[in-house]
Length: 239
Image (cartoon, rainbow, N blue to C red; front, side, top):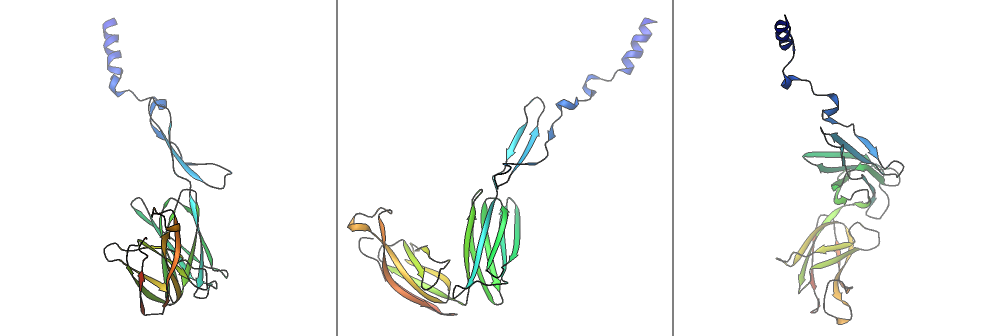
């Protein structure tokens, strides 16, 4: 009788390798939540619990935002312009759209760190800019919707950059532009208008080191709609 009970008990017991895993030892993914509450910025947190290990959290970088201004060739705000922003998030391409108000402003929020391509358009006028949104940063971008022309600058001498300044208005194009080392020239499509071209030179005749820089006026150029303007700059010997 005892041997029969032992055989019946053995048949009713499941093999050890078929035993259910205790719930506490199974891996599970924690639900995403938000961190940094009250800071004005948000950061997504995703976690996972592994068997026999402490919970692991992955913190995504804080989101940034882009604040933009669209103006016409005279610097007046453009109302009703269509604005789109495109960027890549891993393998996905994302897109946002907005429309400017009476003050010419638009805004894209909740942006993960990325290189953002922004296109503003109204009728036949189109302007495209590219900017980088850093983690948790607020980036301001100015865009000009106006008839455009092309500026070609040939630099004679040693100069790696040219500073371009638009006259008579605050412009998104007031910045350094790199000179192509192979051709010694640069090309830009710009809103029609008058521009000043400046070259960087060392201060007080000291050796050039990229920091002891001052700007000297080199030339002026008028960019006309639908035309190409060509300018030649002569860089100082010590630049």
